[in-house]
Image (cartoon, rainbow, N blue to C red):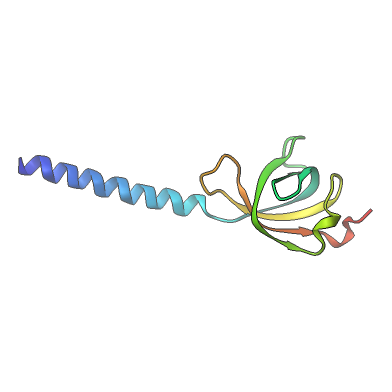
Length: 104
C-alpha cells in the first residue's frame, strides 16, 4: 500500500513538472515580419514572408496592442507581429506594428 501511494505521488509530481516545463516553452514570444495575406479586424491576421508557405502564419488577435494606426492594416501591407502559443488552435498576437515603409 505504501509503495502504491509513493508511486502515485511520484507520478503526480512528474506530471506537474512536465506540464510546467511544456507551458514555459510554449509561451516564448516569437516575431514575424512579412506581408499581410488575410486580415479580419479583431479576429485574425495572416502574415507571409520568404520563410513561410504562401498562406502565411495565421495568428489570432486577442487584446492585441497596435503600434501606429491599425486602420492601415490590409492585405499587401508589411507588418511585424509579436506572438506566442498559448494552447489555442492558433498562436495569439501580443503586438502588431505596421512597418513605416508599408503604406501604399
